[in-house]
Image: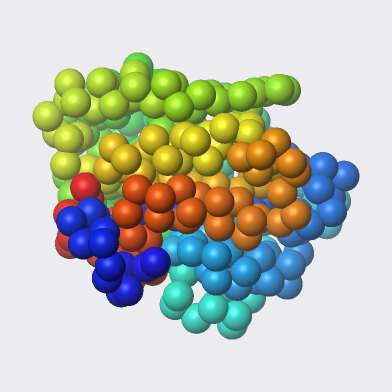
Length: 291
């Protein structure tokens, strides 16, 4: 059920489901349906849209299938997705460093591509006080360009620091979408729904964050349970092979769309409607209630 379909979820803010179909690390050795090429990503985007996604979190790879921030590769992938789904998905690129790219390279890619939306790890873009002037100029440019930012936060300390950066003006006022990562990338990582609580406590303690929309991503077979928790508490969610390959049953998912469908079913079970891309854009731009 999407935002446009009405139904019993009329009192809920619609849930934004984002699909993260590949990430920076996994390959087809991890799952044969993991998309690598622009064409494969576009096919996955169309399937995820049909399953209930409103946004795609986009990673691209180089000729050796390694993580890349190549601007031309991003343009190719974005064009392929747009050819398949038009504007029916928000297309968000990642600026993730993966230990390869500097903050300067990350910001340069975003300036070059000028995507609709971008995810930014605060620890990477703003690693220390010395990085703040350059990051502040970049984030001000981002706001002026109308690019929708999502800020990646890995623990409650990150949330508190982000609140301080926003209070000081390093992070400009205005729309911002928070992503709470329940655990870090590590072998055998398994997130729990209770991992969310520390993030929410930190957000509640920061008056300048309380009205910002937030989402989570989670690792392992409890991904859908984490999504259900976020949905019940007014948040949004990102699912997909980047973080998890398993269905709630513990069986490997056949594709990314199956994980989106599982998340959509969890939302439907509590009567929360799904956002379509137009609604997601309004929420991310601060034009509609976040929760």
